[in-house]
Image 1: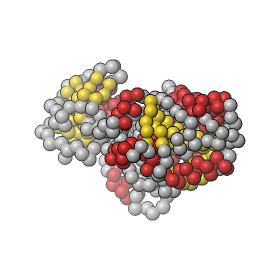
Image 2: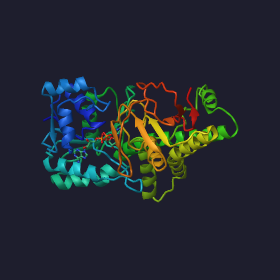
Image 3: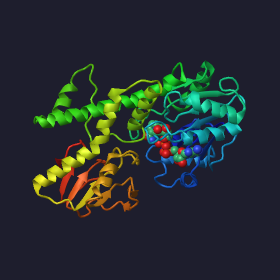
Image 4: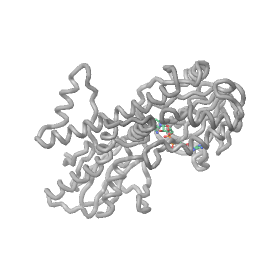
Length: 401
Ligand SMILES: NC(=O)c1ccc[n+]([C@@H]2O[C@H](COP(=O)([O-])OP(=O)(O)OC[C@H]3O[C@@H](n4cnc5c(N)ncnc54)[C@H](O)[C@@H]3O)[C@@H](O)[C@H]2O)c1
C-alpha cells in the first residue's frame, strides 16, 4: 500500500480520493463501520459535500482506493485526518488522535512517513504524537521514520485552491511530506518547524473569529445609533489596504474557527501567557446565538406575534455544507425548545438530536408555524409563505422581504 488515510470524514475522504487519482494505491480507514459501509457503497451524500462522489466511485471501481473498518496496514505513508474536538475547557481533546497514531505506530515501518493533517494545538505533534508513535513502533521519529504536520486550510463549500502548508520534524521529513502533498494539491508551502505550521493554522482561524466578533460588536454599535452596518462595511471595503471585510452573524460555528481560537487560548496558557483579545472574541462569539434570540423576541413582542410554534430554516453552521458542529442554529433551537414547539428544515440535515435528547426530523420548508427564523441561508432553499419570516443570518432579527 502506498498511502493509508485514517479518518474518512469531511477532510480525510477528499485526500484519499486525491491520492488515488494521483495514481497511488490508497487504503482509507475509519473507526466507524457505518461510515466505511456508506463510503464503500458510494451512497448519495457520503461525500459530505467536500468529496466529488463520482470521482470517489471511479477510484473505488478502479481498485486504487480500498476501504476498511479500523484496519491499518503497513504502508509508505499515512495521513491522519481524525477529529480534534475541544475538551470542556476549550483545549484539544487528543483521544482520537492518540488512538489513530497508536494504531499507525503498531504497523509503522522504517522509512515510512506520517503526516498529521488534523488541526492541533501548537506542540501537539512533537510533544504528544511523536512519543506515542515512537513507543508503539520502537522506531525514532525523524531518524527511522518521517513525521510532518500539514493542517487542512480549505473552506468547506469554497473551491478556491488553497496552498498547503507543511513542516516536518526534520528538513528531510518536510521534504518527504511536501513531495507527497505536491502530488495531491497544486501548491505546497514548506515551513521550518511543526509548531510554526500548527500555529499558522490556529492563528488563521483565530484571526477570523476575532474579526467576526469585531463585526458583531460594530453591528451592535451601528444599531444603537440607527446606522446600517452593511453600509459601513461596504464603505470600509473600498479601502484598498489594511481592511479585510468580515460579516456580522449569529455566531461563527464549525470545527475550525471557534475551536481553533480555544486552542490559541489554551496554548497561551500553557506558556503562562494571557490572550485577552482572543478571550474577548470567544466571549462575544459565544453570546451571539442568545443575542440573536433576544433580538427575535424583541421583534415579535413589537409585532404582537406569539412564539408558540417556530420553524427554523437552515441548521448547518454555514450555507451549503452538511455540518452542524458548533452551529449557532443548534444553540438557538435548543434554547427555543424550552419555550416553544420548534421544527426545522434543512436539506443537508435529515435529523437532529437536541441537548434534552429529543430528536427532530427535517420538515417541509413551508411547515406551519407562528414565525419562520432563517438561521442559515442555503442557496437551494427557497421559501414562499404567508407566515412572518425573520432573517437572523446577520445576527439581528430582520423582517425578511
Ligand atoms: N470539517 C472541516 O471543514 C475542517 C476544515 C479544516 C480542518 N478540519 C480539521 O480536520 C480534522 C478532521 O476533521 P473532519 O471534519 O474531517 O472530521 P470528521 O468527523 O468529518 O471525520 C473524521 C473521521 O475520523 C474517524 N475517526 C475518528 N477517530 C478515528 C480513529 N482513531 N481511527 C480511524 N478513524 C477515526 C471518524 O469516524 C470520522 O469518520 C479536525 O482536526 C478538524 O478540525 C476540518
